[in-house]
Image (tube, rainbow, N blue to C red; front, top):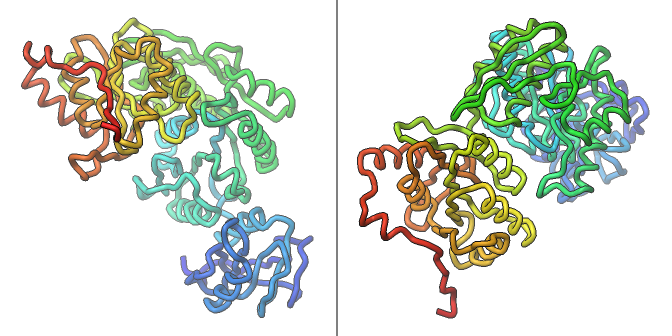
Length: 508
């Protein structure tokens, strides 16, 4: 949609308490936080990003045709200015307004929390697509505007990107949109202009990279999101999360609870769990229905219940919602099974933190299945976090192969040692910096009935020193598994498998 086809927006009407300098009002058809915008009749939002220089950007924006400035402070400018208390909030609301208020014409579901946002959002989207035949979704694994799938979506998408995605979704006739509200979006206020029919809260427990202060920031953002619920809006929350239960009790929103273990409006009971599959019985009100899925683990079972609870809140039939949930049988890089002919199972997971690794390993080992784990050494982690990663590996995995693809061998040594500090028997850990070689070693070592978990990268691409071509765990596992099936390991090769490898370092 070009600027001439967009609705005219009066900043005086949109921000009645704002102060105007140089004019009584500013009317525009577009806005942008980048000073070199190619749009017409647009307003420049100054200071949205903290590392810019607003006074210099204003000059650039005026030279590119800006008709007004949205700012928190008076700036030297030849065009009118609208001064607001918080420019990030105002920019988000203006972006939605120039997109012709798409939230008024589409069913909006937001997913927020410290864990499980992506998987829950995709599960809800699958449920809605089964019923509505079309759905728009925006997640860190990709998105869709209801017409085009596989769209690249940034976890730190700004307000304009979200507004344009919603505008396109409405134009495509999509009945509903599901958006994963990442921590970056909450911090940047990118979702401030959105209005929701339902907000799904997945978890408030701390993770390895989310300390108490960060968790409180998420809690505070959740309080603000309650004001963005539509008049009929509802909160759907995980009743199995103790901290989230306390938060709901404290703020008392109109809420529907879901859970596996706690008493909830939409509850689940574990029915059967086999290698590669699990079944739960869902109860919503007086209705019950089974769900069978290849998504393993209690955490994925709760995501299915979240989708069922969203359907329940909208008054949908339970048998319809469960059919939509069962459509989703894999999530890229989230306990994703690699479909091969090997006598053992291979899974890919993004677990790069101790708590997430524990969840993934528990999902596979609950039946006593031996696990060979190819684990990427976490990046940007403290020594304590790395040691915790090693402790989880040693307790839950039968064989451990550490890889280091994010750094060179020279600079990755220290992080490897810190992971080994958490192991009681570090000599049992195999260290193979080349990830492709590590995966091949794991597949050759694995026996019938075991499981191989490739964790730390998920669906992300990596390279090694021998091959600069980007690779991912799923593709490499598919390629190597076919070779292993046709060329099993020999006795001589088994005798030469490496044990603990000590890096010589620069001194050697």
